[in-house]
Image 1 (cartoon, rainbow, N blue to C red):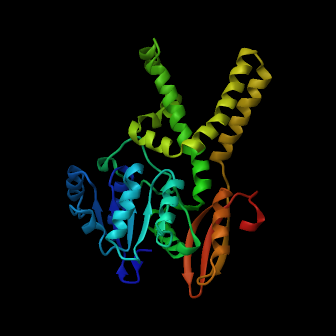
Image 2 (image 1 turned 45 degrees about the vertical axis):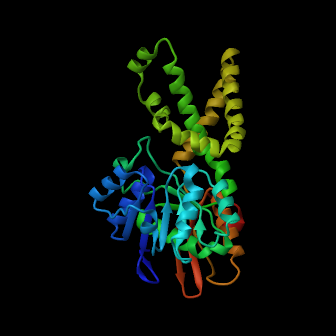
Image 3 (image 1 turned 180 degrees about the vertical axis):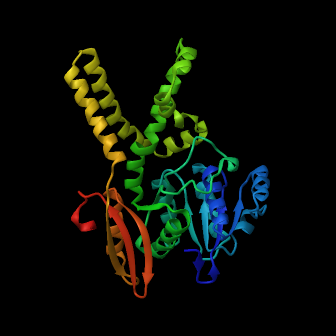
Length: 343
């Protein structure tokens, strides 16, 4: 989906670090009319060296665009959103890539922007940062969360098609609240656990010996500890309530493992580890079932949004969104045990 009613889709990417830079380079690689903008002059220069237009002013970058991706740090997102709104047409679709959704969704609603702003979060990245680390294929096969609203269903459909067709990603529709609860366990707490392990080793009196023996399990377990600390702190603080709440479950499970060790309770230890092993196996071997659902393209969109929210909450995703005449059709994928109302 690389066209708009005015012809070839015109896109802008505001904030071109790892995620924004990867979005920018993929859009450029796909042949779309795309420009970038970043507050850092050196980053703008690096982007121009990659063959992409980088105006010096944000307003110039987003003006007359069909879609704008907001990819700056979480604390700057509200003001950047308002700046983009001031310089774009009402028909311009806005989305972000922030790792929390509740706060920005509430901000957009308070400013009457839910008809054109779709909160988003691509679940991809590396511990590296900056446009020099950007990879056009970063999102291939990745989950990309979008938060649909009935009044913004048109922008949601447009973004869904774009993300599937251009980025080869899977669209996961979710409410902001469900997203923030889920990513606390899926993404944010893993950063805490990686940091805890790496931090404990850093403070140990055998640090060098540990590093001398460390292999795959230590490397994989501490990978995201290499993420820039300020970026991780912003993410954790913005989702503080959910992270603290879900961290209690992780702590309780770890306490159970420690108690089994102290008591030399072999059966209890094996049972807990087998539960963890079962989840890991299920994660690697997920087998989802494809289905197709259709809704009226116009009119009341509440049933459509309810389906989309239920799909994401059930662990499903979309690989297609097409409007054909007066109908919109979705290609969805769901776990076998998903509720019947989202099949």
